[in-house]
Length: 114
Image 1 (spheres, rainbow, N blue to C red):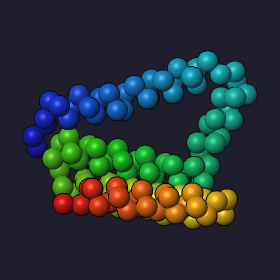
Image 2 (tube, helix red, strand yellow):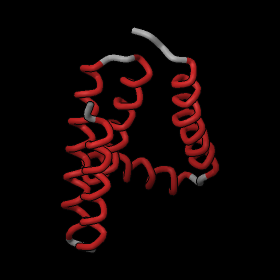
Image 3 (cartoon, rainbow, N blue to C red):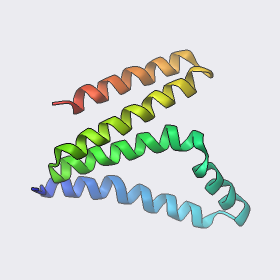
Image 4 (cartoon, helix red, strand yellow):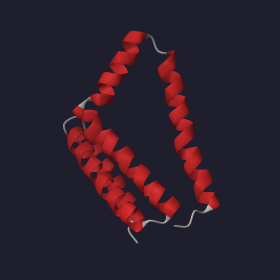
């Protein structure tokens, strides 16, 4: 396990800044909005679409930081599952947007597979 300093800095910026910005926005909400946000985050739709994509991308980023190949495989699998659920969910609303998502997901997979 070899940690590259450049990857560590990029990892910290890419994950800590959005986390603290979301936390700050959450703390500024009133109690009703906070409950609504928590309910949205706990919904199946959110977990299977955005949650899987973000979790998969987190594992992919973590695998490049730690140079652990199995973590990359797990992250890619979770990312693909979330992408498929997102495409299916978006297909009902907008077919062109779901095709763009499919193209971006294919590009992301192509760039992450060695």
